[in-house]
Amino acid sequence: MLDATVPLTAPATAIGPDDDSLARAAAAGDRHAYEAIYRRHSPRLYAVVWRLCGGQAARADDVLQDTFIRAWRALPQFRFESALATWLHRLAVNTALMELRARGSEGESTDDAVLADLPAREACPAQRIDLERALETLPPRARAVLVLHDVEGWKHHEIAEALEMAVGSSKAQLHRARGLLRARMGEAA
Image (cartoon, rainbow, N blue to C red; front, side):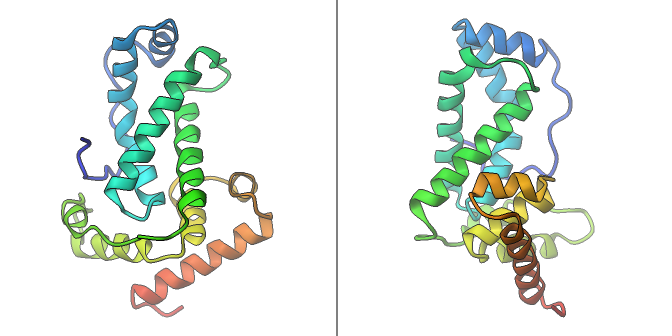
């Protein structure tokens, strides 16, 4: 089972074989190389899918597992046109978005045990937890747009393509999500 904490940053550069070497070995069937890929990339991918899943640890665990199953199956076709980390990130986001579309927003709730374990910024841990809780209350599509744009740095045209919406809808959802967050955090909208 994965640790329920959500890292704020990507882990430091890993020591050992580079991603390309590991990917080539894993594509040839080397399970140890694939385990190294998992250990290296799963914390960052978990942080992304956890946010996209509204802080639901069990859902995020399922999405991460599905992501790595899909990656294992698709790795022999990986063309090394992008970094392995980029490919895995996109695969994780797409897997999370497919899961959100399939399940919708039913069953969303705050996992207080997970929130209590979140690493917080030095300055104000309570505010960090409040922000994570407020983020979880957003409608799923608004939350997805906000996470992809503001946390992951995606452009609106990329979000629109991934979520199958117009670019204008992506911008509107981002504006809506930010306004809802401000209101829920007690700031003037």
